[in-house]
Amino acid sequence: MNNQHERRDESKEDNAYIQRAEEKETIEEQIKSAFYFLENEGDFDNPAELLRYTMEKLEAYLHQRTTLHLKQEDFSELSSNLDLLELPIGRIFSYRGRPEIFGESSDSSYSFLQHTEGKEIKVYPLFQADTRQIHEARQFDELIILTGTDMGGRPRQAFADRVSIQDNTLGIESALEPFADGKWEIKEGSDSIMRVDHELTETYLADFTADGLTVSSNDGEILTLKWNPESNKMRVAKQPVTTVSDEAVPGHPR
Image 1 (cartoon, helix red, strand yellow):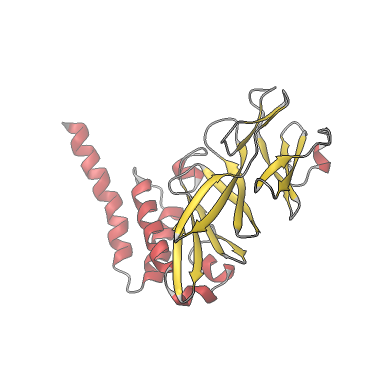
Image 2 (tube, rainbow, N blue to C red):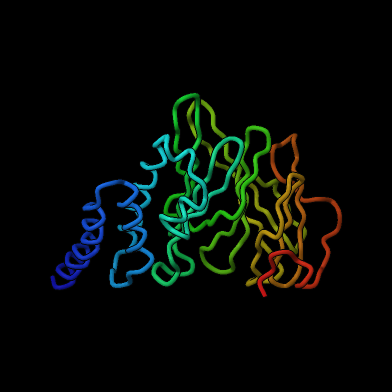
């Protein structure tokens, strides 16, 4: 009984932050206030509720035509952790909750695609309360390829997904063709690029160009994938995988 009472009190405290944000006059001020609480307050026990509120407000805000003219620096005034990726077909917004609050491998990633169809603004949720964090995105014809890191669990793994829009419906699926050579593995239908020869080896995006992407691992191995227009997916290149030094791998954590 005491535990139920404590949980109700905790929820009431978290709702207080939402109530304080709601007191602001404009949606921009509400979002900015909510982001401030998320990133500077640490005395709540259910931050996921405040995060959901903030992301719902952000999604509603992105439906406003005035936001089409805003740039990264404008959105950074709402939160310095709100990332914007510009594409010909639209714009991708992504946010991940502070690891100090949500944990390193938490499902605190949110992302949206803002897309115009004629005079209408569409906002499509991509990842919601997810472990995948988007780092880069590119457009291949009418498809969007998202790449980044799946932060859930250990080891962390690079991922690549394919996004399409048909009849006002957004679809997301793996952007990878299956592959296995005893060292690297991409399972059928999976969007993760794994190392299977060493259990705790992490993989991450090293480079992403119009030709394809390069994935590296924390032991210096690299894997190159090329865009296959026949399958509209990334295929592992046929050249042998090469071991390189840490210094030679772009983006390698040092």
